[in-house]
Image (tube, rainbow, N blue to C red; front, side, top):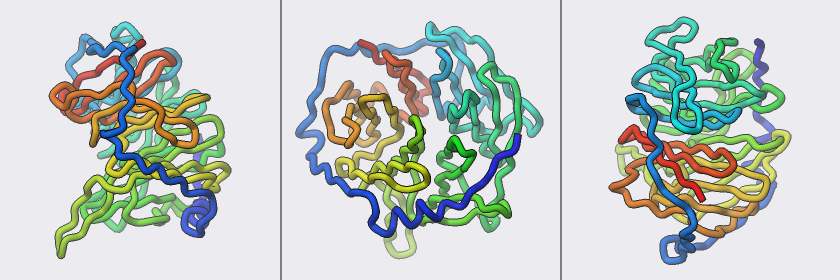
Amino acid sequence: MKIKFISMILILLSIFSGCGSMIQNDVVFLDNLNIIDTYLFNEFIINENLSNPTDILFADNYLFISDTRNNRILKINLIGEIEKQIGSAGYGKNEFISPKSMQYINNNIYIHDKDNNRICIYDLDLNYIDALDLPVYDNVVEEIMDFIVNDRNEIYFSLRTPDKNYLNFIDSTNKIQIIKSDSFGNFKQFNDKIYYITGHELKKDGSTVHFSSGESYLQIFFNNVQENIYSLPYKYTPSDIIITDEYIYMFSVTFNTLDKFDKQCNYIETIAHIEFKTIDYCTSMAYDGENFYLLDQSTARIFKISE
């Protein structure tokens, strides 16, 4: 399977030439929560011991989990039973070293095999299709935070090194090119549009570099052109996003809330405001059309929110 890498120059021009619209949502967030009480919150139990899981994905009426420290991918039905699992430590087919983010694209599952520096492609029954090797950026230790492959097989991703963040693309010579520094976040695709959420800001204090909550944005791209950019509540720090025909859902790791927005990113209501002692760090969530599944990386637990 051949993947075509396309330079994201149009996106670069669109982001930084002022095209598209910037819409401010000036909400003092915690003081204006509209919390609804029609949803039930329960732990979603599976009969497996997860170790540092980092992503959960819904596709074809199943949940897929990247069980990172166990170097495996699980396929689970919606009552918590394991339908299939693949993976062990290694570089070969059906082997991983720290599998992390996943995407459901064109009826296949794309998995970022972090320490093998590649993206592995599987069908929905977790049968191996192909692997895409990724280049190294200036021999610097790096971490791909998330990636997306669109319908035209164009790939772009956010990447973090020890002192900087980048929004990148891979050119025709298989080299990483920087679109923007000091930016990283997560991607989702819905219909023909790509949604990119950014959370952390790069802070420099003398020689010290760190990342903290600050300005958060949602950027929407169509045909490689930025269609809109929306500001989120200050320090919102979204960890994941779900898009439906009518609404956008995001989870804030700062406020520990699952929130509903309209398609113009105006806040509507909070589905769940969860105590930190219950969920410490939700890295990813999935949605089956009726229920939300929140993955807590730090405790290796999954929680289900349903009407």
